[in-house]
Image (cartoon, rainbow, N blue to C red; front, side, top):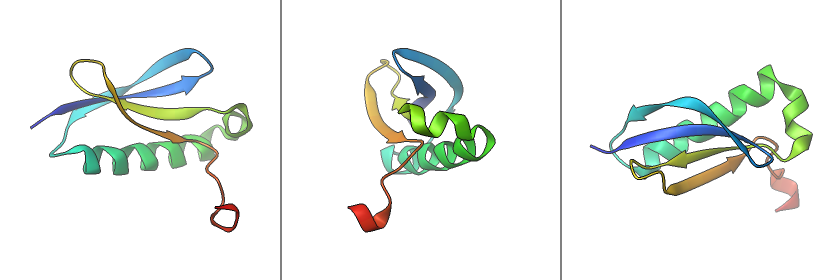
Length: 76
């Protein structure tokens, strides 16, 4: 099973939020969305700064990214 790392993206800076072995990218992306939701609740000041949570694989290649301030469903 692949290992995924999660980072908080603040501008050009990546702040490590940990890593985990998961079955596939679908589970990793779900975990990233959950982490982004939690971070936006704990640190609401990050929402308007364009921050995101990114997922990288074992080779440090970015495989997924989700914003802390997602686009509301009514604006999609």
